[in-house]
Image (cartoon, rainbow, N blue to C red; front, side, top):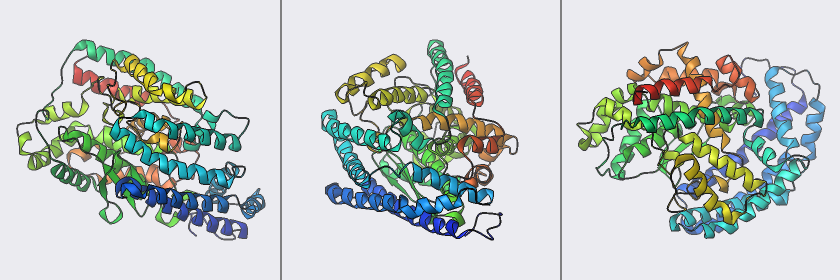
Length: 504
């Protein structure tokens, strides 16, 4: 047992047994994660029925181990015990998970997990066929199961808030909604000003074909440059890019468009950011909350830091453009400034969230959160989702998807749960706050220009990764940056960046 530099002497027996149970819970969760990765990356299409049962069994076993009467007794015994700060944090996190699970029936968890796995496959098929009606029954059943679970967790709370707190513990919904309102008020007029300014940024990569095999090689080269640990990770393709893993095995995926090499490259760097967080967690704390990531918003701060503040910087393109030219000779006349502009062009007519620019991205998130909430709270019927989605795209971005595959079927996330889109915007805001704090200690631009990415990874590991779940979310943000979560740094950053790009 290791909890950093804090003494582990005279540890109560209840604490030791609780840690042993925590490691078993983690192992079952990680086994499920590998099976989920395989389903989305390598599993043959016909494997879904068996895979759904496998995942269902693992989740049921994990749930039973978590809500066992012994766990409750150990937690009771440790209530008021003389523990170190790290030990108290472990107990706090395990108590929270236990209390949020104790009243949830095991058979509900089994049904929910099985249906989630089946829904993942149905989504892939529905998206490929551009057929929302194929997905609708599975989605309708899924929301019923999730509402049932939320009611079991806390029958006095709204299901949406309960679902939100699954992914964003210790960060009040009201705080996030305030940040969203600040962004809406600031970004909508900024995007309109950019549009009215009418300056066209360079599109030097358009008009060519970029084969997938060479794009994969280019993405691999980017990962090597950034310092991806090949002994503990790998790059594959998936219908929707994602990261899966822990501090020993953090795998990432991307996807390709033969007309646009930047899509796969940006997605790869984004997922690399997620992987750095997983790989930066303390290896000696694997199996307990101190070796686990804090929240989806903190996780997204890592991916958005590498995507927005590194990949989308001028300095990165000064460094990396020659590598692009080596892989695709058709780009040999592209200048650094053109490549930088292409990576940062604002285009509200883009339909796809994961391919959206840095500003309109958040309007994609806001409209999803609004639809998500209305659906969870029963104000929106499943059959109404495509039309409402398209209406909101028109309202916020001035564009209507011609297909559901490019509209409400574009993301896989509903297959996993609801009320979980906030993390993307929280992550972008926190990434800018972390970037500002990092610049107090490091010459970030110089490190990027010189290809010295280790100091950036090490700073994040020191200030964020190594803490795991030691601190509640709001406290972690203050520990890492010196102040509470604020949109100030993000808004200052985008104002300066896009005023320069668009000559505002």
